[in-house]
Length: 632
Image 1 (cartoon, rainbow, N blue to C red):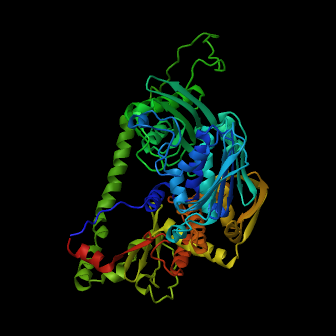
Image 2 (tube, rainbow, N blue to C red):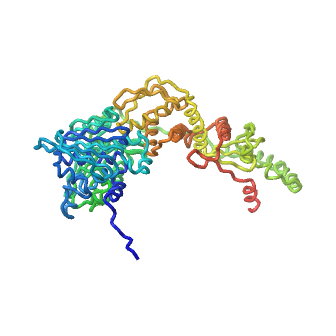
């Protein structure tokens, strides 16, 4: 029997590694920019074409590489950061495994130009699919200039699964922002299709945050700083009144490296308990410095998940530090009895002599005489009532005989309780759809009731129907908004004073990709530049909603879902609008409103479920009701 186990060629091994390290264009940029920072670059320029699918170019003014280093840097596990296993626990650089360049070269065409500071000439290297095509000496600037073309050109299946350009560009911007937030002493510039997207000059950390996410954030930031024997914690958290449902900017950094940590995120949110509405999020930018020996950054290929040795203790430090900042800046409500503005409580001063009150009474009053008169009258009245007692129960015998000779059908009484409660309600019109005949309101006595401000009860031919009022309205509004989008028939309602929408740079590509659909809905939004937009008109029927929050929620939903197909985006927007505009639980409805909602619901093609699959109505069959009472 022949041997079946063999070593993979380096080109195949590199492609496998690329599947873990290089997932999209943003991954390439992350690795190249981190290498530039490790090379002590102070200016980094990033140029992309077609959201990085066609070309990615990263230019830095770092130390550069020699001819030998340039060639070795593309070999797998070639690194200048570690020499032995123990070095993994003393890492203070961004990259260290030596997989990035090898992985990139395995799935793209790479051109590198690099020169050392003390050299007059540099090196140009061309590699495609892990194969070196050329290497020569050239004249170039100090530092490194990487150009990556046709990402995943040799793996069509991987290229096929890349998202739309707007989504990939949003991911690239988010990746650059994460790195820029750790290195305010480095300037960054990002260009997409020759258009400047980001320009972050050297600045303080607070100014870097403001430059990245807008000036409005400045007034909401609270400073956090604490130093313990275990960790050093610094950064900023936002005030409670700046909380939002979606889209909060939340960043954790450990030793200059971005990380995701749900456990520490809960520690921050715990500090805001009872200060913000349930479900809201706050923005935070928190930087942790810890002994590298107490963490493991090598548990995930992208190095965004980090394992800590003393997580529970760090949890307590984070919670205490954030609470201290909230209290220090008076963001926690308190009652202070020592304030100088308290009103003076006047001292009691006796201005006149106190006179004892006098008691007055009628000496001729005799209660027994009055009681006698009342007793006589009461007795006479009771006597008259007792004489007519038979008339009170005269109908019992007659009713008993009628009951024994006539037993009405339950179906004839099914609307009695509802009609008694609503008294003068007129019968509704029967729906014409044959598909839902058994569940349509009865033609005789189409009475409705609202139960607990949540459900609408109505009698139908098959029994008693419960309708979730919010979900029913979502179903109706979704069909309305989806038709407006697809047919571009949105009705606008002009605003007297335009609302200003401010979006961070990473969200602008997503917003631009759905702007046509927003216009179809009835929004009129003007670009003011710098991520600011003026909302001049909104769709008719949503006057009570906050248009800026509504649009932000749409953008965040589109980012989360990653919808690329136009119809999917249209569905997403219509559903978001419907949920935001639908009547809420607890809203009291008039009889006319309930009838109109029921009519609109059964005019929909699919009244039983919301667009996202939630049950709208439930019917208790007449046989179930009859059986319950017959068995008791």
